[in-house]
Length: 205
Ligand code: TYD
Image (tube, rainbow, N blue to C red; front, top):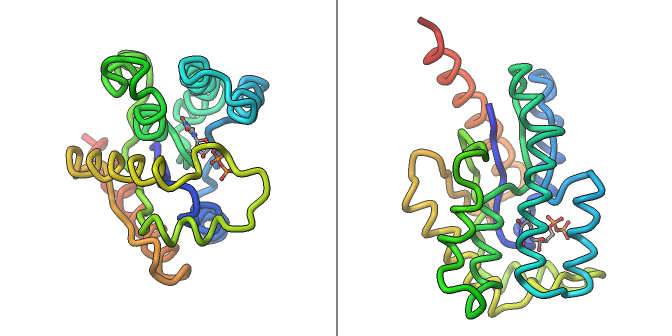
C-alpha cells in the first residue's frame, strides 16, 4: 500500500515523519521521499537551487519520480510493503502547475498527462494544511530556502492542494497542521493502520 504525505513547506511534515517511524515501526514500512535519494534527485535539487527554467525543473522532477518508482516504490509494493513517501506526484501537480503558469498553456493538464499510464496513484494521501502566515513564520531563519518558499507561490500551491483534496475526497485526508504534533501523529498513524486493514480485507476473496 502506498501512502503519501503532502503539504506546503513549513507544515511540519518532517516532524510527522519522525513520529510515524516510531509509531508504525511494527509494520516495518519503507520510508521514502521525493526528490529522491538517487543522482536524479540530486540533479533536481541542483536545478532548484540554480533556478533553471521552470520546464527544465518540472521535467527533472518527473524524471526523479520515474527513478523513484523504479528503484524504490515498485519493488517495495511488489514485496507487499507499506510505502510512506514524503512528497509524491501531488507535489508536482501543486507546485509545478504554479511555476509553469505563463510558460505552458495548461500546466496541470500537462503535468498530469506526463504521469498518466505509468505512475502509481497513492492509496491514501495526507495533506497537511496550514495558514500560509504560519508556514512562513516556521520557515523564518531556515537556511537554504527554495525559491518556492514565498507567500505568492505558497498561497497558490496550497489552494491547488486543497482543490485536489476536494476533487478526490476518498484518497485525500486533510489534516490541520496547527494541531498538537502528538495529536497529528496519532491521528495519521491510526488512519494508516485503518486503511491498511481495509485494503487487506478488500483483497481477500
Ligand atoms: P523537500 O526536499 O521536501 O524540501 P525541504 O527538505 O527543503 O523541506 O522539497 C524540496 C522542494 O521541492 C519543496 O519546496 C517542494 C518542492 N517540490 C516541487 O516543487 N515539486 C515536486 O515534485 C517535489 C517532489 C518537490
